[in-house]
Image (tube, rainbow, N blue to C red; front, top):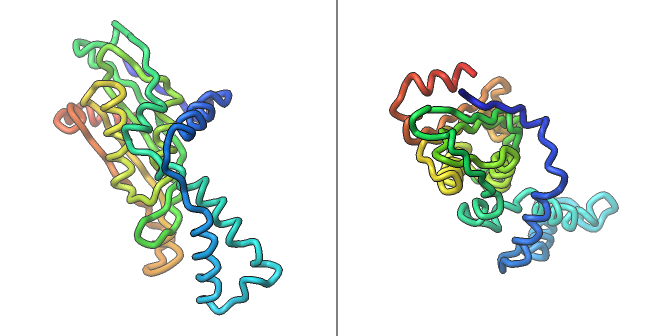
Length: 220
């Protein structure tokens, strides 16, 4: 048996947001928005523009607020993200004997390439795992993927981070993370290849050793 859900149908009703806010108050790390404003102003000057003109005078503040939002995941370790979104439920029916698979697919996320600070977009994540006596709330899987993306990242590392958090939270080693995405560092600069799409697969446990299990996942 496998359980599958389209992530667009999830209604989290703001509960996860409260969990993040609660954890933010506990932590000491903060994004230095003042420093970001100063450096963005310097970049505008370096580009030969006037940071005090009407269209740019508030740009440093806007960028600082944006970075505070899109890089929120940098405030937390994988362990802390697991604690925030680690709600699980005991399920005796899910044991090693059955090989049941839980799959959440088409989780849409974005991130920023750490090499060029360029947007990685139209990214879709599929997370699968074989439960061992407990399952994680489905919306939490999406939240984990989204928060991991909110860092300076590599697509390969996004998959590894999600897999690590899923292992910690669910207690199973059998985890797979499949990601496809577009990278503006390839489309808007450099090679400027408009059709290239990057696909990564992070396989742990039985997904790495059992070809038939992996084929089941890929055929969903």
